[in-house]
Image (cartoon, rainbow, N blue to C red):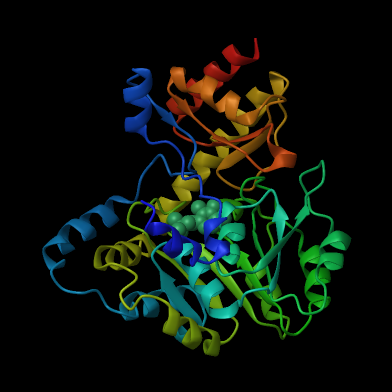
Length: 372
Ligand SMILES: *Cc1c(COP(=O)(O)O)cnc(C)c1O
């Protein structure tokens, strides 16, 4: 295909050099390649309990309506969620998963050459998507205690930095910033910096009574910020694809509305999210079980000599003291899927999701067999 060459070389270098996001292995793939029936899929932080039965009923009821386009601005859901969050409806934007909104925010607010700061290890898309628009991403490495060093973050926020984005709790570390550390960072921001605070694991984090109200903290400052949330994790709607952002100012939403696809959130996702918000008791049960299992797994791993980062989320991050990709591969014949970390400073670390009791036991047994 020689004729393709001029076309490809005219494509932006930022795209040609972009790393591909590692979206993990599927159950089908592992079944086929390793011939194991029972799979513990603990690589994607999915909710093993699934969504509320009320969500399933609402989505099934709405299935006959899929010939019609969805509401373009999710107005029915917007009203319910604004009331629940106690924010103005105009402060909200919805996406095809919150990943979609990372992309929309980046395309709306960044230009080629802009400086972006995030932490390492980080959620892959926090690096890949800014790079896709030609931004320069600087990473501040977390320390041996898996916590970030405020002074290093402040030092990285050089004048003109356009975006500070990070997951909190961190994906993959699971750790959270403290209220005081966030305030120290926010005090040092330059006025042209957007803070994108990705709180995908909020519902799990809130099980810890000391987890701060970061929305209230951001609102103390007269700066532009976006908080990202999702229905994919504790609500169990990952396959439906719906997330949202709260913006400090509706003007930011108006700009992002120009960039997003007009019908970026499908009809069933909007209906499912409304039903999910109507069953808080279900989410509370999911969170309670997940946190209990997380602590059981942590204790078991620690006993085997593998301490993990203190996690506020539905996963654990630990040093396997061996090449992570190799460790993950050695777990596959036992039907266990985990996520190996690929960033150079963390490439002996794996992230394991907290699944059902049965899946967690399968993982612990396979890990024990590996360690011997
Ligand atoms: C899982 C996750 C998301 C959520 O992605 P969706 O597109 O909403 O499924 C966003 N950010 C982080 C850091 C995550 O771990």
